[in-house]
Image (cartoon, rainbow, N blue to C red; front, top):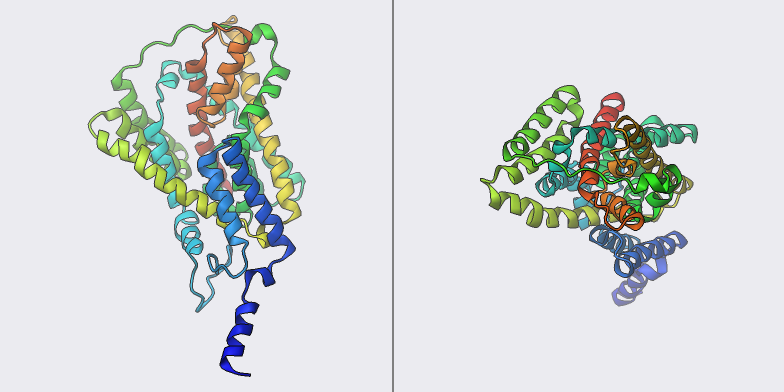
Length: 385
């Protein structure tokens, strides 16, 4: 056999089409579905689009975008692909999730929560979904670290889900990350039925008093106090809460506008790209196509629904204690899908009463939910890490 003939044979052996498996085909279809949802329905397009298209690429055999196993030691003498480097050095090291929190802090206004501090309790109540989903996962046979990583999906916070899962159970990161971001985009479909089931029309029509103005001093002192207090109480939550509050301090200080703008725009855009590509690169057929993936996706719905219910039920208690001055629907915004869940609450309120404006009241629990989910992750990490 001549050298040319051998080269031709090796070329055909290396073709992706020749090595394509049924699993690869399924995952390519899954990836294209995510792309379709992002383009057609604009469901979390900033993340589902890069996640979906990178999932397609990593399931093309011999594409050499991924050469290393997702879990375990790096093989000796095997050169990394581009997605290997993104996952190994940006996702699994928690750099990207933490930078996402930094940018999120620079985009977040904690004013509504500061104006009405009791609404922070609603953000805490919504975390019940984390622990209900976690206990359900344990009953289904998942290990405690895996169950904690699944439960945190209920916080409706993708970066926190990735952060905790990479530390506790990296082997299920593809399923938990996709579940978290997919269901975040489905908040307008998941939450309304739960809210309607737990509230009456009269309760949904309750109007709330206008929030008091919040001074600049309060807004500057809040992130400093929050990072110190939470850091002392739950040190494991300090990385997430600390980066969130540093970004928020940049925003509220008014003296580093250029840095604040870079954090919420340029930096946030860059790390979002790496986050999407990194998560999509984990969706390889051998890691994703398992029965436990379907279980995790199902538990994700349980987490979201019970988190919504927890917030609404405490909202009803607060409504009773306040003499009917608090609309219990704002408790549903306690999940940290900012500002989507707050907008869902506002839409439902305006559907019942076009003149009812409770968006800013819902934003209080909404931003509190971001902190609550980070603290919940810190508690789980302290207990299981």
